[in-house]
Length: 249
Image: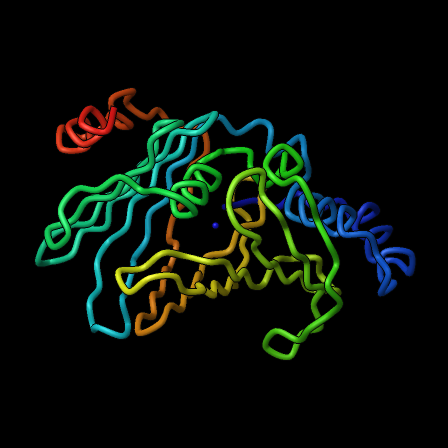
């Protein structure tokens, strides 16, 4: 589900004008407008790696911990959430998406869960969205927290359709809904994004609230660094994941 702000006033005024404010605005233009108002294509393309840190709270369970996330071009990722009682880890290496914690152990993500993880791990997924989605459709408008939003249906190259809600006024992404796989089967996740701030030239949400059946998760981003030095082995598969991958072959 990342970060910056270099909004040229002249560009923003054009984008916010009547042509783009019309209810029949093309879905591709809405996606492109989001990239422009959050920093612009050139600013996104300068990023080769990223590190973010903050807190994660499972509000429905009263658990909280620290979160650290790493990404590197083109599609490597690693995230760790450290709770007092243990830690949760997940990552991708371009083809394998995995997760590991003290309760469920190590596992390989499959199906839609794998597709979504690999897509979100791609560092330039947002700014090069056409490479990851084969169709964008405008499904009307809908209010999100009192703000009128364009409702877009995005069909990825692999996986199920996700729905995005873009503020008609600011062009910012306010909400995403997408199908997920849980221990109890298929469900829908609702992700709300807010508190956009400038991080190195990219406007980035710092509060991310996710709702799943029976589970509410709140992420607060405190720091984002672009192009930091990340050790190459940061994205190596853990031994447990390597064993699962080898057994699957």
